[in-house]
Image (cartoon, one colour):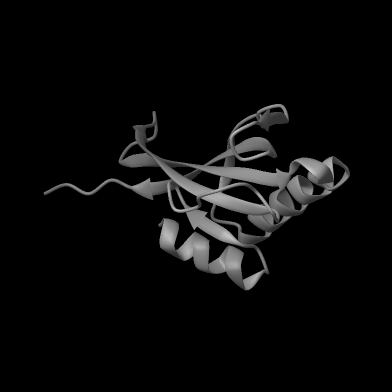
Length: 115
């Protein structure tokens, strides 16, 4: 699931990393994808696969954070496979990365498999 999403986001021009892949300080805006596991739903035979998109923007570029976040939300809507799971995290600073950070949460419905 995440591999397809990563490919789609990269094709739209985003720099995308897996969790733990990026090291050092934030020098340019980028995304990190994190698999949050699966949860059951009340719908018969349907699960939700949860993901998080972590958004990083250099500490010197706060003015671009909102537009970058909105751009990601639009692309996720256009992709069409994902729905918003939770409200976005407020924009905070990540001192270690020297960046502004927010988290976007999405889910994708998936047919349960019975073995």
